[in-house]
Amino acid sequence: MTPSVPTTATPAPPPKAENLLASLVCNIVLPAVVLGNLSGPTRLGPAGALIAALVFPVAYGAYDFHRRRKTNVISVISFVGVMLTGGLGLLKLGGFWFAVKDAAVSSFIGLAVLVSARAKEPLVKTLFCQDAVMDLPRVEAALAARGAAAQFRALLQRCTLIVAAAFFISGGLGYALARWLLRSPAGTPEFNAELAKMHWLSWPVIAVPCTLLMMVALWRLVVGLQKLTGLTTDEIFRTEPAPPAR
Image 1 (cartoon, rainbow, N blue to C red):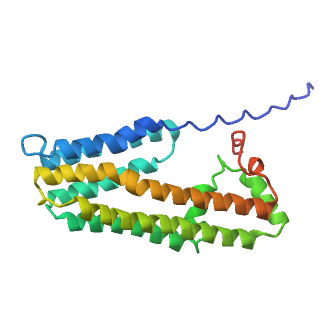
Image 2: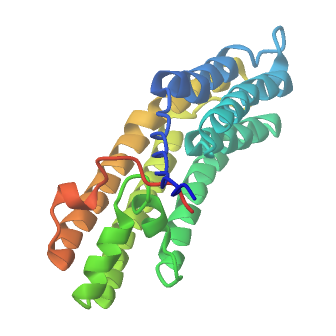
Image 3: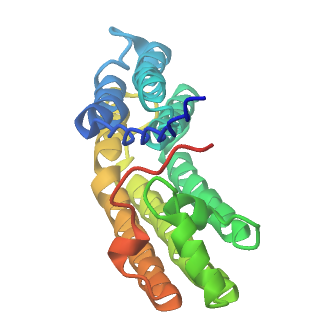
């Protein structure tokens, strides 16, 4: 018999990177332009502008999912934000309710992050400890070898507090921004223009501080893992694609 030649598994291709420019345009720029400029009665009207604005994050999210097989979080957030903003606009509610909406959504996410700290898989671990980025088998083996599972759990809880704080702060900033900008009566062209301006400003005013706190949480997690495992940063993070699951 001819000895069989062992075959080596073909490494999984690296995950496709998202087109950041297309994501920003479809999820932020175009919905803001549509809501701000096409909501007037002589154009699409409030309902038509809402539907048109929703098309962009939905279409981009579906395209990105088909391309990368991952749910696009920015598209989901943009869809919910546009839906709530357009829905409140259709009801012709004043700026106070838009401020409450921004504060409530972020605060709800922050509360969910806090509650997940006691779950088997905290949201922070799901968010930061992804097998495509971290060498999780090596990290888990090092934690087990050092008996540091409890310390790792405590590290995740500390990082959870930072991430939850990021969402609570973004909720407060969103409330303040809406109360500052939305001054005109609901349903007027001036109010629609203020909504568009708020949509534009919400990303630098709210998203940037939130992102910075997320980076702090990730930094704390990596530094903590280095101390608990004795691994270097290069050993914690993958330099090659994760092997395919058998």
